[in-house]
Amino acid sequence: MSDKNWQVYIAHANGEEDLAEKLAKPIREAGYEVVHRGTVMVGESFTEEVSKVLSAGAAVVLCGTSKALGTRWASQIVNAARQQTYGGQTRVFCLQMEQEADVERLSFDECIALYWQNPAKAIQDLIAALKKHYPVNNTIAHSAYRPLQAPPLPTYFVERPEYSNDLKMRLLTESSSDNRALVITAIHGLGSVGKSTLAAALAHDGEVKTRFCDGIIWTTLGQQPDVLSLLSGWVQALGDYSFKPTSVEATSMHLRTLLYDKAVLLVVDDAWHTKDAQPFNVGGARCQVLVTTREGTIAHALGARLYNLDVMTAAQAMELLKKRLGREITVAERESAENLAQAVGYLPLALELAAIQVANGTSSWTVFLQDIQQEIARLKSFNLAGARDATDEASSKRLADRISQLFNTKSSKISTAKSPCCCQGNSG
Image (cartoon, rainbow, N blue to C red; front, side, top):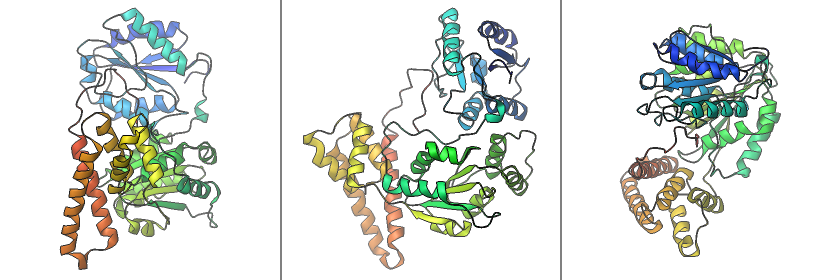
């Protein structure tokens, strides 16, 4: 990046070089250093180039033509920006160059006026947005860049201090007695209980970010992760773009080297299998690893301190319903809402989905309560037949998973309407 001005990178499709230069001229005149390629290569070279620009704290303007948005790299840019945030700044701006260019399918952080409707106003709005997030002559040195990959917290986030305070204290104060050892904490609990949200809240905490002064990196594994790709993403997040990942073992070892003297919090979210989580168990004495999992055996295998996360309290559940509804719960509906919250076991995800559908008028508290009660009765009947082989934990997991599946099935039928804006904030 320039020592004087912010750098703006214009991403465009092959063959649209003249259009990119047309956009670059007024941006340069506004005081920015603008670069773009003669051609945009689809594949590793392009991905690496954009990652370098983002990691340097620069902005990317996506030249949103139908040709560009029809390629894979447009979504790669947005995903890369989500992985390379600094202080919550916007990274990618999109100009809808043609009316038929489908920009709504991608989620951007900043809404830009439609170029095809009014080119002059679109450029004016773009420059205004750039100045808002990247003031001219107010730069960030590359050496000060710190990755913050944690997903943003939803607007309806409900604090759970009975858990977060203790976990935060652990992250701030714990250190290994062995300078070569790594402190690992595992948040364990049922599916949909809020493990990932709790981890994200900790990652966004100001004191935690100060403690891990070299950044916070995050990966979500799931049941079938591409481990090598995720590890490679961490390598690039730490600023190394020349390393070529050839194997999980070699890339994990390289990460260990990069993190040796750094203070980084490594979050491994939604770990299902020990073999997938183990390669991310890296870092020096100033690092810590925070794992979220529904499998306690993974924590044991990683040598982690286990922290059990239970469901919400009744009061927290009602607060979540109120925030997700976007209004107060009326006296007339309070009892039904309380009964529903109890029926779903105060699981945050089920509460969110119920509130969404009530807010949309898709259903009522009473109808949902009946659905849940029928499902619980069916599961209890199923469990009774094999009661001797089922543990309480297994039954609870089955119920939690089934409630989530039931609500997700209902939720998927609600709304297929597209966003009215070309860019949506990520609700997390």
